[in-house]
Image 1 (tube, rainbow, N blue to C red):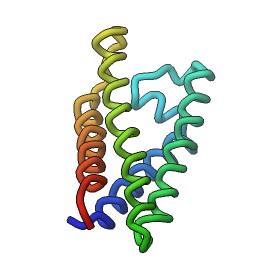
Image 2 (cartoon, rainbow, N blue to C red; image 1 turned 60 degrees about the vertical axis):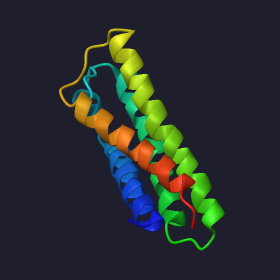
Image 3 (cartoon, rainbow, N blue to C red; image 1 turned 90 degrees about the vertical axis):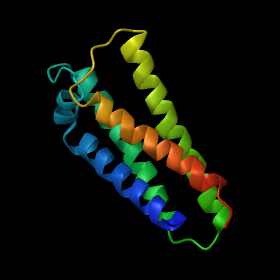
Length: 126
């Protein structure tokens, strides 16, 4: 897989997840185990959706860019987002003891895969 293809995949995933959280935040809160009646949780999901969609937009703007260094910068941001999200999720589950939602392990696998893949393509020459 090429660096460009990987950036496209990460960007589309991030944009789709972000738009889901932005436009149907109550459903996103329910999916991730939140309380849909809690307006603060719903608002937080909307806010996270804006950030995640923004990350996807940045990736889409760079995925066919000729400047490889700009692409590497985006990949480093994707690495941080994927691996730090994974670490935060595991911390919340195992240290803070927040109950896991039904798809936590699948989500963690995706975040970890995107983070490690981003690290790989960031480090790859060419």
